[in-house]
Image 1 (cartoon, rainbow, N blue to C red):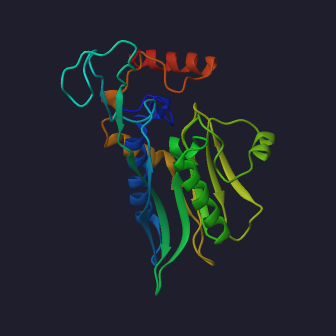
Image 2: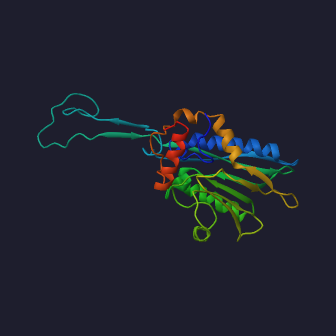
Length: 266
């Protein structure tokens, strides 16, 4: 089944599904970049690792709960609880979750190889205020900017805190958007190139800078998304009879409902 939306599918934004979406977008970004990069460059995959406590709204339930029956001790052995004794507590065991986030490094091949551009696709954890994933992402973002490395950030999530490097207030003065692609060139600390993305339009073609003297390459984000969709099982899991998470604005939901009805998906 084809993606029923012209660009980003908002039903894919559900945090529980995003790890699979993220992996696919990174995988095929690397694949397409390696097809179009000139000789002397390569796109490689990098990885961040951090540990979080499980969150029912985002991650699978990995907590084990022991609920002692009345009149028993948690460690075993039947006993009659004395009058006015403290009630037996619930015992909750929570296993931390090891999170891995991948990104792309465009490398100029040499001795040694040198990173010229980092390509990031944002995850819900990167946009969740106070989360380890956000803190680690912002640290990496700042290090990349200070190192003079080009940074291309792709945000296909409507919810969460503003995270791309371009200043939020300056963006708001330019207009509105549902999604963003933001490019910061390492040679100009005070300038950003931003592609505002509407839910109702295809994803844009963006620029990926290379080293001095070499022209940018063009990355077709819609081609990346289509390739990821075609090789995934996303269509089998999506229920278009429900509202997407996060919900759409009223006008956008009406537009999406009509689009889905036209394709007999709702």
